[in-house]
Image (cartoon, rainbow, N blue to C red; front, side):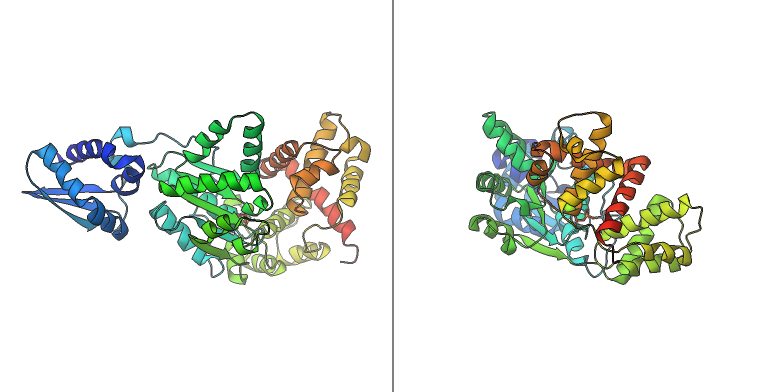
Length: 443
Ligand code: ADP
Ligand code: MG
């Protein structure tokens, strides 16, 4: 029997003894290096796994090999530097694909620009990818808006999917989890909900601060959390503030959240902003002089989403006017634009959107579903959610008592289209400019 076959046979035999979670955590990343007389050497991906195998499973491992080979053996462990490829594992252990909501492949660890503001968070993300469910569980990433929390979280998810050792990655917003929970109660399908979330190998929940005050959801999440951590499934959470600062969050959840690793992401410094802008230009195939990039990087301090938005906005404007992206042209247009994100009251925003599209507010918030109304309505949902940070419930109220799931749907639709549909992108930029120029008349 060659080493690979012997190892597969070993995994098959040991599986019922150790259970699927431990198998995954300790054995699936370990490999049979050599059989030398009575000595069997196993390569482990980390010192941590080596220690666990040595202390908890050594006897079992030796007994199992003894059964298969029909002779007494001693095992020893060596740590391998880089994790071995999953393809050495037998098919029946190879999960086929992610069966969860697809992760946006755009966000990877490779295209995450690292600087002093985010290097700790980035290192933690790498550690999680290396040893999911083991090193840091949960990984709790927090920081202000647009600093790269979601990007980093999806980067972890995508990297783990690429490793193909784990089958089920679930990424969801905290709103989605809440809605699933409420839906499950209404339809009496708690079992389905639990099957879904508790069977994940990696659960990524974005913007967990929205759990604030949701007692039922928190309770359900607490049990989901415990079950997943108990079987070494990795959990990654993001929030716009630390667990301690989330109001109306149960103590027991707080203590779970701080019990893993908490890392924060700070607003990027100037050099990091320059590096990010360069990366984004490259991604989008734009060529900008160094000076222009530095000018843009100095125009915005904190929020990378806005920095990126500003870049796109200016490039679009310059193209429309057939102007070269020189520092002069850019500063001309930069100065015309206030450098803050949108603020203002929702009513004012509604009326500006209506102005822009030539509609009445009554039509916008009313029940009719013509195409001419639906797009403005969705854009309004997006602006109220992304820019004004209103909850989907609140937005539903403002828009004539619509259900919050309708709001989520509309908002997500625009979020996606802004990245893929030039026309929608242009409309959005124009609407935003209109609002900006009206709400900051003094800028
Ligand atoms: P958050 O979730 O913290 O609000 P996001 O992860 O959505 O922020 O990031 C906002 C935008 O900025 C995204 O387009 C993301 O790709 C980009 N971004 C943030 N940080 C980085 C980074 N370090 N490198 C490259 N792009 C980044
Ligand atoms: Mg986010």
